[in-house]
Amino acid sequence: MGRAAELEEMVTAAVRRNSITGGSQGIPRDANLFLLGVLDSLSVVTLVAELETVLGCTIPAEELLPENFRSVEGIAALCARLSPGGAGGGAGASGGAAASDGAPPEVR
Amino acid sequence: MSALEPRQTQLPDGRPLPYHVAGEGRPMVLVNAYGMKLAFLEPLAAALAEHGHRIIALECRGLAEPLEAIPGPAEHAGDVARILDAEGIERAHLVGWCTGPKVALELEHAHPGRVRSMTFVTGSFSPLAGAEELVTAYDVNIAKVARVVDRRPHLAGLFLKSLSGALSATGEAEPGAAAPLGVAPQRYHDLILEPLLSEEAIRAYTRMVVRFKDHSVEHLLGEVRAPTLFIGAEHDVIAHPGISAAAAARVPGAHHVELAGGTHWCLLEDVDRLCYLIERQAFVTDFPEAASCE
Image 1 (cartoon, each protein chain N blue to C red):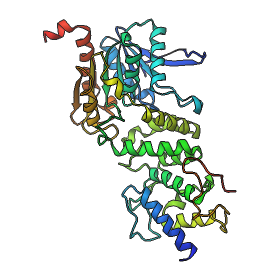
Image 2 (spheres, each protein chain N blue to C red):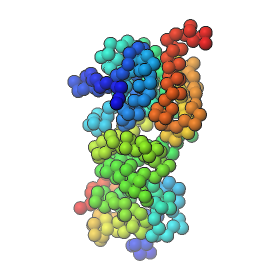
Image 3 (cartoon, helix red, strand yellow):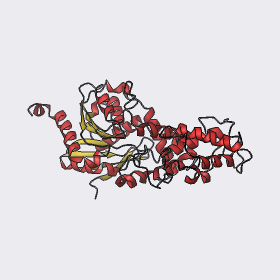
Image 4 (cartoon, rainbow over the protein chains, first blue to last red):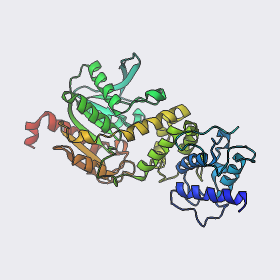
């Protein structure tokens, strides 16, 4: 499985755990998660917290834009930018090294 | 124009403790919900003042406090006692909305002689053993998000965006979503958002929510001595209507009524019925002989 596919799988699982409907399976990767009712604006907050834990970094405020969270594809692209080798150069997405009860270091 | 007149006394450290007053007559304290503006109390305060009550209205402080000193229900109960002292009032009837009943219960516990009666309007009483299912989606989600933001304060801005609907599909708060604006009619959105429009206020608010949710009053219910009335609302999607009944069942001699067709916003939408119930509770307490002749 390639890096992009791994990230999308991780994002799909995270979206499912934070979904208001309890599911994201079978949803096209580019489908609008808000329009489908999978996410609402409140569940985005808990989703971001989980992604930060998994990625081991703080998602910079300038990346906390609605368009970055509207689809699995968009969220995975954000994670790729924040992962090692991505544009953001953050900690490993599969590392999951961040403490779950504290804010990890911010990506710069 | 508001009938409520601003006043202030002092906290032990010398900082001001603001409150509002209206009317003359039998003293009655209205304790607002955490984070809500005074405007939510104004119609009820005006109606009760008009009917012969000396109203003291309290917005629970916290949104402007430093994070390490965010007060909880016990501290807010201390604030009520200080205000009663400042006003020269020995005993008062207490009315609490939403988070307000926990404050009232703490005051009655700490200073039982100062409380004539209590009326709890659409109160939030969780955690309550045996009533774990009597929570709303709002209860669950606001607690979850508040804990996330409390642990990760840098997400306050994101929470603020979510409250204002900036993250939603439509750019507006989603109707029915388990967020403060999603469970409130559109006409109240500006009122609800106004005190929360900065990241500092959001951080303080989420700390207040966490402190409130972690604060159990279960052990106090069985010790209540003041006559107490619990008012639930049939269509309340914030405080489960069943939690009022469950809490009332644990308070000796308490009464419980449910507003048919009522919502959490009954303070604005059901003023006449609420005013009648609150006045009757105070009257029955103050004049038990007359009440027995009804």
